[in-house]
Image 1: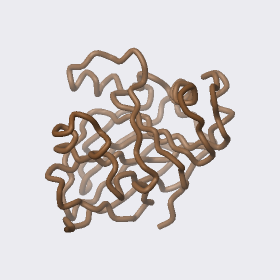
Image 2: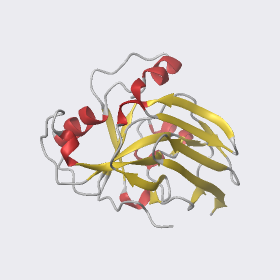
Image 3: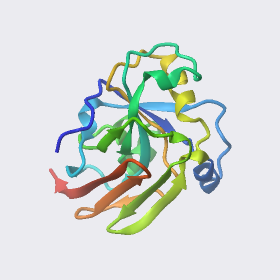
Amino acid sequence: MDNPTDPSKIIAVGLNYRDHAKELGMELPDYPLIFMKPSTSVIGDGDEIIYPSQVKELHYEGELAIVMGEETKNVASTAAHRYIAGFTCANDVTARDLQRLDGQWTRAKSFDTFCPLGPRVVGDINPASLRIQTRVNGQMKQYSTTSNMIFNVYELVSFVSGIMTLLPGDVIITGTPPGVGALLPGDTVEVEIEGIGILKNTVAAVTP
């Protein structure tokens, strides 16, 4: 299916839910912890997540995604809303075994199909307190609200735009709630966010 946006880059945020930090027994960060995923990792609602042959432990991470509407640089958090086109659902698919092995996140986060986005971009929505949940084969795995974010969407846009220019269509995925876990070939994973809809993908069999 078509992607809801065609970003030049995806900026992701680690450890941005208070309840996730509590689950991990970690201190709250003083500033957003960011990393990047390539544009080639993007797929749409209904597309297949490919389980790479070199990966042994594939995880889902349901997230709220910010889609930028205008070129953005050094914007204040109080003005950030003017630059946002809207919001969609994201799944920050991760090769957890490679993340542990490498000690950094690029390889683990960057495989093709590792950034499902969709099903649509919604502009007329308040992102401050949206229910977010992830289901695998119909079973609830993650449940929280965006009110548990450590850094809200406007603070994230301001922070990232102070580092790099954000272009129209670029995406910031805003961190995942507690409850991340494994995906297996044949699984169906759904990320549902209140007011946006359901991002649904299946996991394809391991390929050479």
